[in-house]
Amino acid sequence: MIELEVVTPERHMLKVACESVTLPGSLGEFEVLEGHTPVLSSLTAGILSYREKSDVTRLMIAEGFAEVGPKHVTILCEGAAFADEVDVETERGSIEKLLKEKSQLAEHDTKEFKRVEAEIERSAAKLKLF
Image 1 (tube, rainbow, N blue to C red):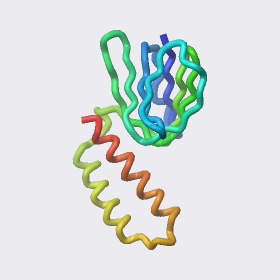
Image 2 (cartoon, helix red, strand yellow; image 1 turned 45 degrees about the vertical axis):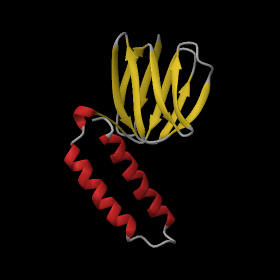
Image 3 (cartoon, rainbow, N blue to C red; image 1 turned 90 degrees about the horizontal axis):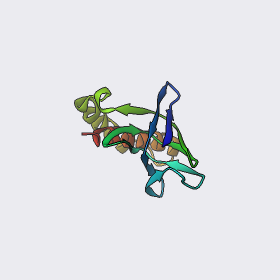
């Protein structure tokens, strides 16, 4: 068994024992099983899933980091949400608004451009839960 822990700046999201964890790594999705080689990986906004016996649970995570060990996975990310915490229409509206905002940004404002892109990625990841 692997102990999975997900922590965001706002809350301690979950702590659960599971059989496997699939993560949205910056270089691509990867799965962690018990006995995994220790690794530190950056994460992109996407879907984290974990398996407990035959049940698979999915949640959206924002960008962050994963610390993986033989018996644990610790996720530190900018945000996370389960499907029952997401309002599809709100997220679609948010993406629409952010895309307009992004199109009006000046080329030299890279910090604001990156912030808007990150928010779009988070909203899009939330919609992947459905």
